[in-house]
Structure formats: structure tokens, C-alpha cells
Amino acid sequence: MITTYDLINLKIYSEIKDIIKNNEQIHILDVGSSNFSRYKNLNYKNKKITLFDIKFKKKYKIKNTKYVLGNVKNIEKYFKKNSFDIVCAIDLIEHLKKKDAYILINKLKKISKKKVILFTPNGFLYQKAEKDNPYMKHLSGFSHTDLEMKGFKTYGLLGLKVFRGEYQSLKSIFLYPLSIFSLFFTYKFLKKFDASCFAVFKKN
Image (cartoon, rainbow, N blue to C red; front, side, top):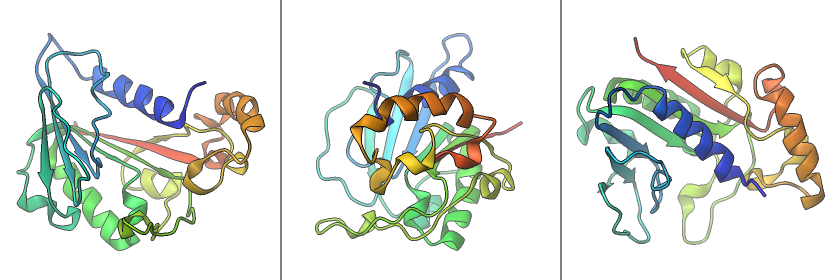
């Protein structure tokens, strides 16, 4: 069974490989990464990964990967302009107030040389704070139109929104086939009805 993370990662890998030329080294920043690297299965050896978050439960030893601890609201203090080929913020901006999220997006555009990749629920999705992690609470929501107005090209990745609930999990395992089938329509043409918003900003 293809999981939510599989769908997100496959799309990210596709966007990364799109800009690779002549086996050049590629440097990726994952903002709000938590304590794991989604890029360890990326089939490309010449990569360097930086994981940035406000909290890491555990730091794993992963080849060509380093951890940086910090607050996204001050991310410009940690990274210079054009210091990464690709900057990703997966399931992050919805944890900020909308005004702060837009400020962060502008900063990510400056830090990236080539692409900024975002993934967020399509619209506001209720999610409460966890006992050991208050940052898990959702504070805002973004539509495809919101991000397109910021220069992003958007896609739906999870199928119809009506099939999913908190944490973007399927409301029932029996809805899985319908959700995957609906993705053929919500990926581009009916993306406003998709549960998610995968957004790519490509710099000239």
C-alpha cells in the first residue's frame, strides 16, 4: 500500500531530479524536518542534506546529512542567500500564523537558488498540540490559490479531501482505493478538492 509519505516523497524526488545536471552536487535544506531525513532513499549519491528544526528527539547518523537546531522565524540568521539548491518545508507552514508563514515563504525563496517546495493541507485542517510537542498544533490553512498567488505551481497529492481527517489520515482503510483513484483527477484538474497542496516555486 502506498502511504501518504510515499506519495509526498516520490513527488519531491521528481522535483529534485528535474534540476540535476551532469552529476553535480545538490544541497537540500529541509525546514521543519523533525528528526529524520526523507532523502535517504533518494537514488542520487552526490547530495548533501541539512535538517533544520526547533526540536530533535534524536539525531541519527546519516551520510552527508547534518542537523541544525533553530527557530524558523529567524531562519535568515542560520543560512545565507542562495545557499541551497532546493529548500523544502513539508507539513510546516500550517503550524504558523498565516502572516508568519508568508514571511517565512519569502525567506525560503531567498535562501534557495533553484526551487522551494511546500506541502500543506488544502485549507485549514484541525490538529491539536501534542503533550510532548506543542508545535504540532495547526494555526492556519492555505488553499491552492493562496500559494499560486505567491508564484507557486500547485498539485493535489492525496485524493479527495472528504476521504481524510486529522493528520490527513484516511477516515477508513476501505476508502483507500477510492482515494487513489480520485488522485487521477485531483492531481491537476480538480486540485481544489484534494486534501493537500503540493507547491513548487522555481527560480529563473
